[in-house]
Amino acid sequence: MRVSLNPARKRPGGEHSAPPSLLLDADGAQVILGRQSAPMGMVDPIAPAARTLFGPRGATLAGDHGPLFVADTGHHRLLIWNERPARDETPADFVIGQPDFASEGRNAHGLVGAATLNVPTGVAASDGVLAVADAWNHRILIWHGYPTRSNQPADVVLGQADFESGAPNRGHDTPSAETLNWCYGVAICDGALYVADTGNRRVLKWNRIPDANGTPADAVLGQRDFETRDENGGRPADAAGMRWPHGVTVDHDRLFVADAGNNRIMVWTAPPLCNGDPCAFVIGQRDAAGVDHNQAAYYPTASSLNMPYGVGIVGSKLLAADTANCRLVGYDLAALGMTAEAQGLAGQASFEDKGENRWGMPRRDSLCWPYGVSVCGTTVVVADSGNNRVLIWEASP
Image (tube, rainbow, N blue to C red):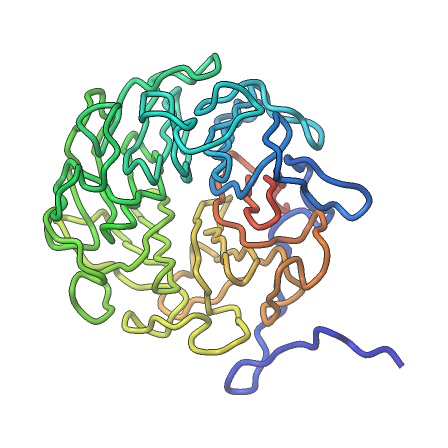
């Protein structure tokens, strides 16, 4: 008799979630980047090279044919492919943050500069503009024109007054509209720049892409003003405060923020009108006061989340990297609301399942702590951090 090692899980009330629809191609990722060891698909992250990755937390495809940018977080570098890779283990064309592909280390074991990195995480690219969240240098680097050579220096820095500085909040106890602290996420949407300023527990918005160092942000969410950095805005969890904001995306007038520390996605259904505006509702909790992972249950459901770090829009769906549940979930944009349930799923067999690589070895359709997701047309790029790889995966028709 065959015994299932992964029986279907039930909700606390006893009922099952509806069966998931296919979110991404059932054959798995079209391309896997990161050196793999046959036959089991394990990735060797130890020695930096043009083909290896170590805990990548962000990746984005700037166009159907490229370029592709990957924040190779553990190696403290940005890898760039001039064209969209067409096969597994394609080597990067050039590197920013290290003197060569074989080197690693925070700021290349040197001083902070216009082409150094210290735990790079989020990456965004749009219309020739590249933005990288250089998290532990507490800054955003911006290139006005995609880099075309290794260690091409950034054109603009945000969060610091110059390229040689790297202190949180510029060395001050109190943040401002010009400072950053452990900024992990970045997004470019409709010509505006959004930064998940995680250590200050807020999201900042620049109405246009800055062209001068240290440009102050125009708006803040998560705090009542630019000088406050309290967890959840200094209150019990509600619709305005944040704990660990990480991913940001926009769909027309709707704004989505992955608030990983509160195990939820915050949704504004119209552009916020003033600093600290509360969101309209949250996804992943029963109400805006809820904060527990998987709504205080061990196993997930279609309506729960566990440390979601990434969000994106693919077709008519909101896509979320439900990081600690090692899955991607998709929500119908037309049916969003409080207690919304996901319909699409990737990485797990059912909504009640969790586990790194489905408690097995890595496969083309499995996930281990996916931190970042980005979308280009029908292509989803996943920073599958725990597997030390990046997946280029087509959305299901």
